[in-house]
Image (cartoon, rainbow over all chains, first blue to last red; front, side, top):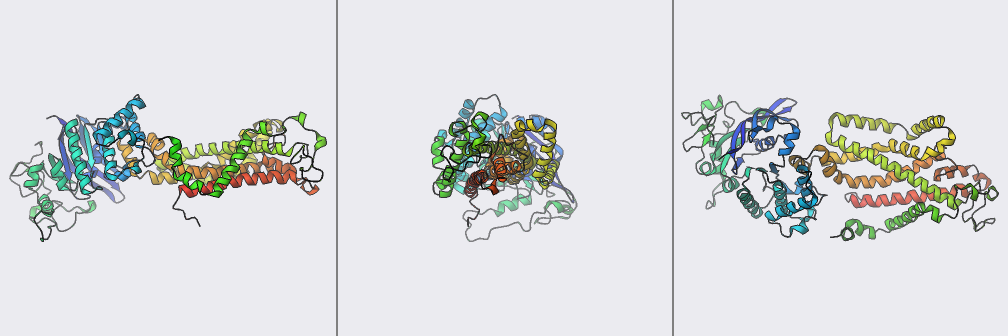
Length: 331
Length: 305
């Protein structure tokens, strides 16, 4: 499989009044063409920041301090703004969390879709653009798309709007879609529909996808590989099945144990005690150490690196000290 | 769905049908505007044509007064011009200046407001301070100064020819901060919304985001403001002309008509001042009432007491 995207030691900082705050610290992962990767973690773990930094669109005062985002071998982190715009929204698309907010309320769906197409292809005629828009609306299973093109966002339900947003993301046949919690604002049945749709589209179009979510169930259903983030670092990554079946890092274990189990009626839900540290005061050593049930002395002094654990999954934890550090090992 | 059908189902049309004041003021405005547009066809005389003016006809009262004649329905002014025709032509000039000045204000103000609001930072600070400074000048003061300079440069006789563009420029430039502030305020609210972020993610350039995504969202305050500003511009023009800084007496606007009759008001020739004054009041009032209606429709959150 050829590599589509390679994120290498990505460090994103936010310049705040009290000094710089590190939002992601050395995040690395690879994505092959057509691969679906899940980025999981609690709020504030740096998932969305990672997503935005891939297309180099971190809002002020954030900036990419070091590291590289190689898309087809080209580093997006150092690319010129004009060149970036030919990639952004064209070869890499992004889907947001709230379908109620992402569409412009005063423009028709058709106008918004045509506008997006013409941005990336100014020579394209309106006729052809609306033809493509219709085709994409059909692809996301919007009934009678001709009529729908002339309607405004408020005339659609939440699920429909998210489909339209997906259709807009698909307009330019991107190679990669970054979906930032695409179903959080939707109810569970619609959520499943949207996820099925995304899988279907990835498979038929050969698109890669980075799914940013805090929902492990969704990750298990949709993705092939998963990276678990905690306090700005990737603490565990590997094939989704293996990570879900036998999580290695105590944090991942805690997350999975916290999921409500079927058949577990009447039992208390497990939880990970404590809160994730704010980015300003990340503890020394392993950031998870204050909450870790298996904490050891070394955890309080040394930050662990990703190492290959028993089942081939990579985990950044001092529980696996004997294996080789796997800086170079590619997923 | 055709545009007309969409409009007939819209909330705007729905509330319009139920608002008697709005209907009345729109009717008055349509009558006034169309008579201004078709002035040469409607007015019984051409007040610009010296051939049609006879000084012997001066100061004839309106037809219903004792010495009035039906030849001059609303009487004549001190130079023997038919008041009705002169008022229609004068209103035409007032409306042209009012609309022209508002177009200029809106163009400047909207553009500055959009870009300053979206980009923020230094650009924003410079333009908004400029707006503050501009608003602390009285436009009358600026206009008096400029027109004095201009009259000295081009001569009083030729000033009449350039008076219309001059008034449009003076009123237009003095009032752009109103637009800039209004638009900037709504841009500040809009630019944080996710659709703007989505447009950036979609690879739109910032000017494209501003013009094609944010601008349509600021239209309703612009529309409401514009009605008020047209009324204000007409008033400003009348004030300047009344002071003798605007339209000359041979091409009078409503303001200069009011002024020209002012000295005769104590000699009993009240109609030369009162009639154009009343027309000005009706014109401005109906624009303002229509503006109030639009504001209520576009801003339903506002409590209508």
